[in-house]
Length: 340
Ligand code: ASP
Image (tube, rainbow, N blue to C red; front, side, top):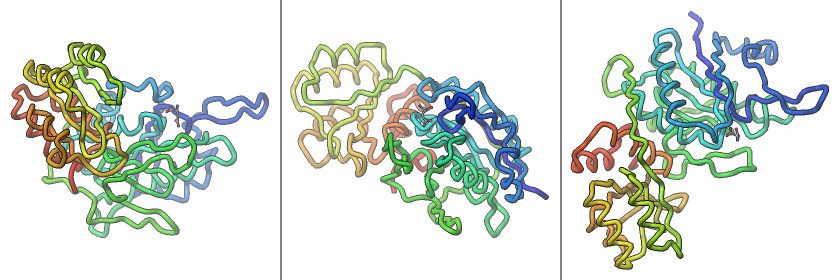
């Protein structure tokens, strides 16, 4: 039987083309995908297209994440896999969030997009789209989905989505996954790194879990962050803070800084520490500056990206009340987002 993929188009650069008359960029209609790319038929995959009213992904929000989770759930049994076309700017946030919201996933959900519009001659979108579809439909030698994960495909590499970050506004290779190797590398063939791919722990139906707490903030520390501004952020009603610190998880040891954080944690705010560095991990045992954070109850986000830590914080806070349970869930891997 022919394999099938649902292509969900949410917006972003990939969905634009040059108008031959005016030269301006206008939306590309993915419903005519076979007319634009007749060679797609050779993939042997039945593609259904579900276009949203396109948005620039700067306008993406948890509402979009929930909508995507619901659509995947509604169509789950009808398709072998899903491709989500999304703007690159916040693709790592949306795809990280989906990785927490889709439980017992045993089919691929592959996010992709492009740096150059699909209707522009030199586009990177065509290859990204075609290969993402091929991966979403791919089966391993046992007939199971090759990649039963939320993944992100860009420029010849397939990543675990919740390990990715957009690293370049210019290069076609826009995404990196510095703390986890690619799930697949694409050259003449697609080489799957099967030992790195998560398989579902048990055979069960897909369940979606769309509860999220939106009272979350990312606070990036910098030399010059002052007490008034820092306290205002911590006193804003926030329930969870992703604290982006220096290097291996270091932050100022000044009394006002530690004091403000301590008070927030005592009030019930959850604080997780991730590094501003693009790779490596938080280790709060090395320097005095990290130890001080650990002592007041800041949780180590280890090697998590800011995007994954933020989505995970929103997810965990919506499900747990007890600080102990919250900390334990944040520290452990839910879907491969943390640790080696
Ligand atoms: N601003 C666009 C977006 O994220 C950029 C892109 O798609 O590459 O929607």
